[in-house]
Image (tube, rainbow, N blue to C red; front, side):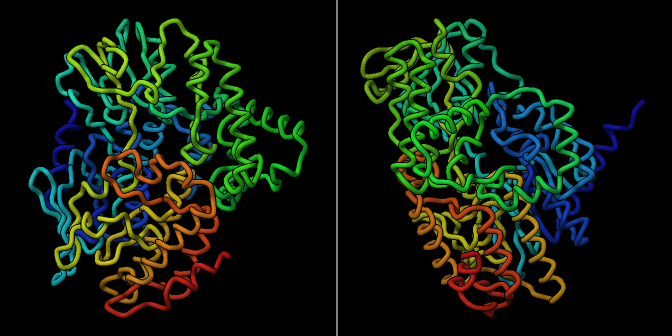
Length: 564
């Protein structure tokens, strides 16, 4: 008889018995796993990951909705800190699906022997800073308490589901699901009347897959959206070999690029070329597919007139693809500049509306009034449904952090400190919350970037900071309030230099969550520039941070100029 289950129980008991740690890490996705590896295996610290799911994967553990797929090219959506991981793992597709990404993260966790320090099925309910002891006290739903000098949040930017509070939702007699909380056993959509609310990136991925299975799909469109074909397909053996051989070059390109992708922005502006040449460039990019489309001109997010040319090209493609004129009009009636909201990529999204079993309801003309026992009632009519799918996105960037019940110095909750919007220094720390680090927090490039690139930079910066603290006997670090204010101003100024804030209902601004402060949250200055700023701040003695009560270096103003 195998002793596997017994061994697993003993290991779980040992984890629970050992609760006085150097670092508590919350979340077992890309961020938490790499952070554990560096703190434990490089610095020799006693670290533990607390994960509410029953497996590693983070965002990808939870997002199992139909069509869930990465929008970064697979050869770049990997850990690049380890040549061994790069050489051993092989992706199957240009854009991998959710199950393959979870398999990859399990592969990495096993190769690095991380699971012995990852405690699953553990929901953090409170994290309070004890100033006298200089320790974070982290409480869980099951009643456990952990103490640690360092608290590191690795909860992801897109992991707190935004379920709309539509009147009557809970009296619906059918079943309703949010795409970010999809049942792990799946949902039988066969022959069912399905209504999907929302057509953002998630909804655009889900529509073709649901349409192929459901008896009828009714898409309730709140906001029309651009989308570019993924042109997805299996990776050839030649490409796989090329990616392994050229890993260093790919890494350098990602580090040098604005968004952390394995391609650079073209060094040309929209009006540097003729209208005919511009159309040919867009057409070629459309055929190549994916996010490379937004890199064909460098001024698409800087000049509204330039952006209009891309927007009109994409709208014309929608009108070419969708055969029903009314559907085509509604789908192409887009009210924001291209790429000012997260630019989706798709596999057959617009084509799905040519199916006989797919209907489109334009909520601008006929808004939802309520959910009834039988379905969804708009201002025009009632749609009888068996299943409702809410593809309504996330309480992005701050939602998962605020759910942790974090309380800093003097009993100030993070929710109070961020009442008017998130305030961080570099997206890494919050004033009044000593020794707490936020991986890809608001104020960092995060969701505007290929996430593994942003994550590796953050985790390595945090690790280097902690290493220096441990070597020099520094007990606590937090940002100076002035440095935070200067950084928030810089984040706002950087965003306002682009067209990004013009998408007023974007989740980048928190506009998809009722009552959430309207603040542009990610750093829009580009990943390469951000990396330079962070490196400069560390090299100059951690400017803008307070260590053991004394300000380290000067305010942020000088550091912001490091990268121009």
